[in-house]
Amino acid sequence: MFNLSVKKTVLAVLLLVTGQSALYAQEKVEMADGLRSSGKIYVVVVVLAIILAGLFVFLINIDRKVSRLEKESQKQ
Amino acid sequence: MKKSWWKILCIALLFYTLIGGLILDVPRKKILNETIRNIYFHVPMWFGMMVLLTCSVVYSIKYLRKPDLLHDIYATAYARTGMLFGVLGLITGAVWANYTWGKPWSNDIKQLGAAMALLIYAAYFVLRNSMTDIDKRARVGAVYNIFAFAMLFPALWIVPRLMESLHPGGAGNPGADPRDMDGRMRLIFWLGAVPGFILLGLWISTIIIRFRKIEDKNLLHV
Image 1 (cartoon, rainbow over the protein chains, first blue to last red):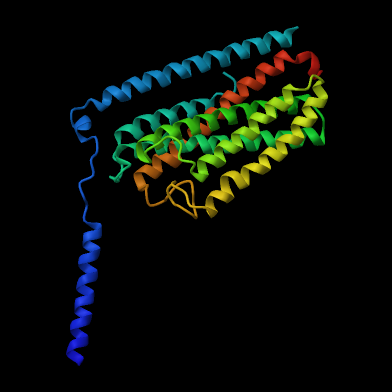
Image 2: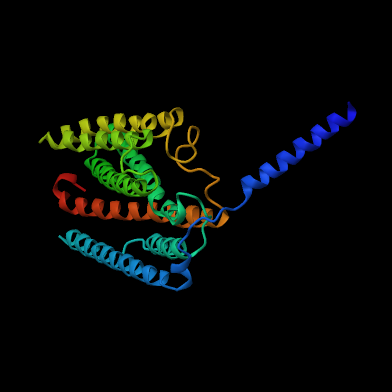
């Protein structure tokens, strides 16, 4: 009787452990590893950085123009 | 540039987000794959929208307390940029959903709530433009803005928490599932993307405000 319950517990623990490990086993998730290892990802980064830089230059220019307008309208 | 330190901070944070967000490692997740990086760009839109619309309603309340057209200029400028961020959030969400949920629009409760909130804010501008009297337009606009802001909470914060959603986190937290982001991602997201995009929204708003101030100088009697 005692033996049976021990067996049962051991079985349950085993099941739990294997179940958990199956759950956490890292399946191969497809990522853009090729793009990274070939370094082409930097091409994308550079293109996006140029666009962002261009937008910022534009925004700063508008900001400056508004500052100039503010000065002119204060003079009047 | 006027008061430029936070504008420089904004530029630095957004470059950090862009470069770090594309190059650094992210957790490997099924279905999401590399698109998990969209978190850095799609989610801050909603943070930005929320901050800008909060600024807008604050100035609407200020206008009702003390009817100064300057407050009205502030309120509309923030509402405009807030809506811009919301529309961008909705579009980027649809693009992302197309590749992860299978279709751009799946009548997800969060999508519906966001669309509803944006329509309510679109009505704010329709309402304003339907009136020619400047003071009346500002007053009615301010009152409507408070109602519109109040509608944001059920649409974006409460209902999505009660219903089933395709968004991560499910019922409970509809925005972000903390399990999806690891430490590195959180660093870029909270330190770079969210404050960066919020500052960008504020920057654009201040430019609109300063321009409107010059334009309406005769009305503002300052």
